Length: 70
Image 1 (spheres, rainbow, N blue to C red):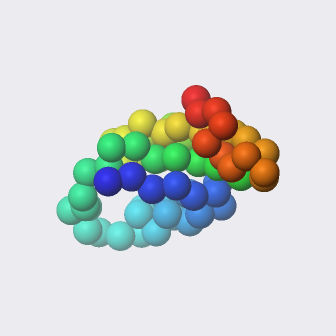
Image 2 (cartoon, one colour):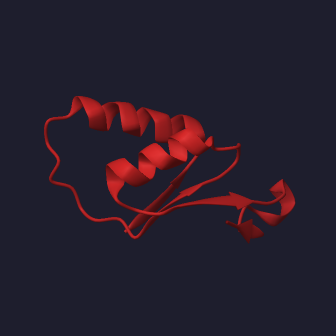
């Protein structure tokens, strides 16, 4: 009940969600963003649109992005 994606995909999902008339979706426990910085505006939009907290993950390629999470 969560997903992880890069900021570009989050923005695409927000655009698609705003174009869709169907708002009957499964509840998410959280949304994780990784691989590039997520702007505070996109994070706030994700939280508002999907009613789920947004966490940003950081790390090195060799250590994966689970090294640190906000």
